[in-house]
View 1 (cartoon, rainbow over the protein chains, first blue to last red):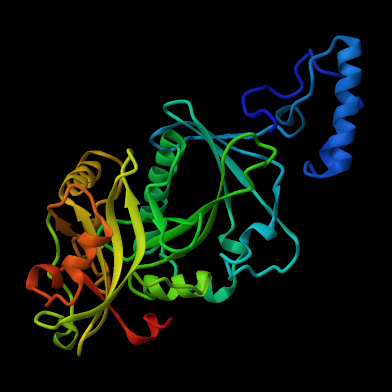
View 2: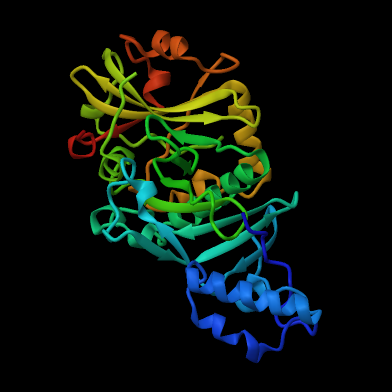
Length: 226
Length: 129
């Protein structure tokens, strides 16, 4: 697993001159071509006494104001390619039917120093799933975001999820206390190139338009009776 | 915790009706991996289907602290819209949940007022499986 690369400043004087590796920015960081070219550049760097290039050098992340409970948040400039094979048998609401989907990633560092990445897959779900989500007018989406970030911090610091969906392996959820507002999420790509847990947000349901169970059935199409 | 009057048409009140089936939708763990909460779908005879969140007393206290002093939104802030429904969790005295505890508490139980207040009614189109 590659090392996380969110703390190195771009194009430091100790790295190869940019003209020797700038073409990497046009490549898919998940591709074999990228890996081969990066290896070649770092081999040259090692021979010439330069520091090795990292993903942060090539794709400088954008610093954001971190939410409460976190010391850092960065938005990566290159999307991560996620294999759809891992959703088979669990998530039935992906709009795209290809072998992989691209998702933008935010990397969070908790106050305890644990890093975790999040990609938002909600826009890649079918319309029927995306309708009926928490609304902004009522503040439901903001409340759910705060609940999700709280659970994200829990996951990063404790190593397991606070709330898991019964009967659907690996899928977790956040909720706004006292309401039916739910947000489903799951770890994706254990071997992702970021070198840290990567969480995918899957789908949300609001409080008054549709119930949690309707979304549950649309996304998972599965139920287990106790 | 302050809460608004429970919004429910009389025909959706499960009080006095028997629970004839239930399903565990989600499980909640504390930092030590103890099972401390769950989301259940209850099927109530002659009343319909309902969603209820159950939680241990200790976990409920912890969640209340988080809402009071932390960054989680207190549900009352979401009550600007008359369609927003808020219900407290159903708190159990057990230290942690088990399958047997849930079976004992919800298997063929008649819904009392305290449980009813925690139950969200699920319209038929929302309860399809």
